[in-house]
Image 1 (spheres, one colour):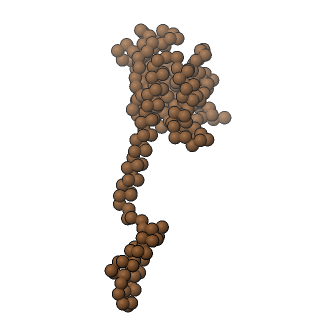
Image 2: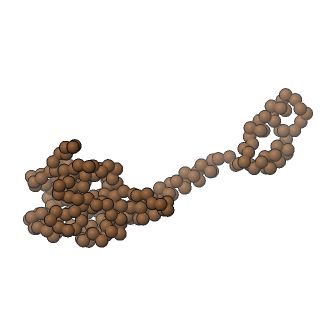
Image 3: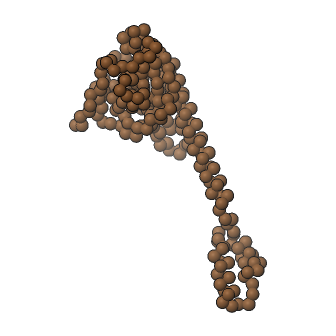
Length: 229
C-alpha cells in the first residue's frame, strides 16, 4: 500500500486579510466519451465533488491558504489532500467569493468570514490513496447533478463560471483551427481535375513543337505540374 504525506493541520501559517480567512480551492473536472460523438462540452463534462465531514452534502475541495505557498499551490494541495487528484490548474481564478461558515463559527476568522479563491482543475490523475481518504469520499457528477448538490450560491456561481470558461475555450480553439485551415488553403496550389489537366496540356504552348530532346524535357515538366484528382 502506497503511503501518503499527512494533510496539513492547524492555523499557524493561515493567511488573513481584512478579518477574512483566506481560502483556496478548485472545481475538478474531466470530459467523458459519449456514444453519439457529441461535441457539446456540457454533455461530456463531469465534475468531482467530495463529501463534507459530519454532513450529508457535497462540496468542492478547498481549505486554508497558508503563508508559505501561492494561492494556486494552495488550491492544488487541497485538491490532492481532500480529493486525491492531480491535474492542470488554470492560473486565472474562476472568481473569489466572500461567505460565512454555516457549520461552525470557528472554521473561518473571528467574525466567521472567509474569502475563497476557486480555480478550474482538469484532472489528469486520480490517486488510489490520498491523505484525506478516511475523511472524504469523492464522487463524479454530471453538470446537472453537480448543480443540485451546490447548496451555496458561491458554489453554483463557481460552477457556472467553469462552464463559461470551458465553452469559451472550445470556441476559441475551433476559430483557431478554422483560421489555420483557411491559411493553408490560401497558399495551396489549385487542384485540377483529370479533364482540366488534359485540356491544359493540349493548350499550353510549352507542350507544343517538334519532338526533340528539349520538347520531351518540357513535356516531363508539364506532367510534373499536373495534380491528378
